[in-house]
Image (cartoon, rainbow, N blue to C red; front, side, top):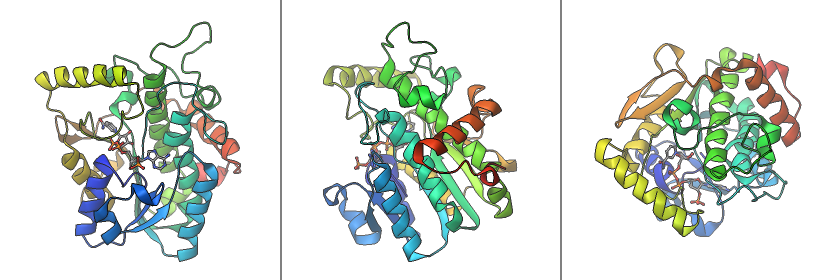
Length: 300
Ligand SMILES: NC(=O)c1ccc[n+]([C@@H]2O[C@H](COP(=O)([O-])OP(=O)(O)OC[C@H]3O[C@@H](n4cnc5c(N)ncnc54)[C@H](OP(=O)(O)O)[C@@H]3O)[C@@H](O)[C@H]2O)c1
C-alpha cells in the first residue's frame, strides 16, 4: 500500500490491520510512520517523488516473493505551483500521483495473485462534470510532465496546481482502465478499481499550498459542507479497506467506485477518461518516461 501513513490511507491501514492481513506500507522516512503502523504493518522506505526509490521498494517486495492479494495505490499530493520538479525532472504532482504509481503497478503486476484487487485512489475532480473550479483539459503525459495543464501555452494557468492534480487523477482513472483491459488482468481475474473518496476534510492533502490558498480552500470546504454531506476520513478509509479486502466488490466489472454523500456508487467515468487513444498513449509514454517497454501484452 502507498499513502498509508496519513488521512484516508491511514484509516484504511488501521481497518486492514484489524482484519489481520499482512500489510506492507511504503513510507517516506522513518519519522513519517504513525505508531499504529509501526506496531502492525511492515513499513518499507518509499518516496514516490523518486523513480529510483519506487524501483528499490518494488525490489524489496519481489525479494519477499509472496503473492499480493491487494495492491492499494492511495498516496496523493498537490504541489504548491507548477514549477516543482522531482529528482527525475517531472512536474511533481504528475510524477507522484501518476507516474510513480504507474511504475509501481508495472513492477508489481507479476506478483498479483489470482483474483487480486488493484485499487488506485483517484478523485471526482478528474471529471469536469464534478469539478467546476479547475477541471482537467487533457491527459497528455508529455505536456503534464512539463507542467503544461492547458491545451496551449499562450497563457499561464492561474488554477495550475489544482488543474495539475485533477489531470493526474484523470491519469489514475485511465491507468486503471488500461490495466483492467490487459491480458494479465483477465488471465488472473483481477479486480481493478479507481476509487474516489469524495471531498474529505481533515487530511493532509492541501499541506503544500500557500497559507492564503489553504485559507481559501478551507472556506470553500466550509461553504460546501452546508449543502453537501462531506466524507469523513474514517468513512473513506473503511470503504478503501473494504475494496482492498474484496468485501466490497464491483458490480458487473465496473471500474469507478465513488463516494457521493458518503454512499458508495459506481458511476460512469468522465468522457475524458473514455478516450481510448489517449489512454493507450498515456500508457505508452508513461512506459518510456519510467524506462520500461510498452508491454503490449500488458495492454491487451
Ligand atoms: N481528501 C480529499 O478530499 C480527497 C478527495 C478525493 C481524493 N483524495 C485522494 O485520497 C488519497 C489520500 O489522500 P488524503 O486526503 O488522505 O491526504 P493525506 O492525508 O495527505 O495522505 C496522503 C498520503 O500520500 C503520501 N504521500 C504523499 N507524497 C508522497 C511521496 N512523495 N512519497 C510517498 N508517499 C507520499 C503521504 O505520506 P506522508 O505521510 O509521508 O505525507 C500520505 O500517506 C489521495 O490519493 C488523494 O488524492 C482525497
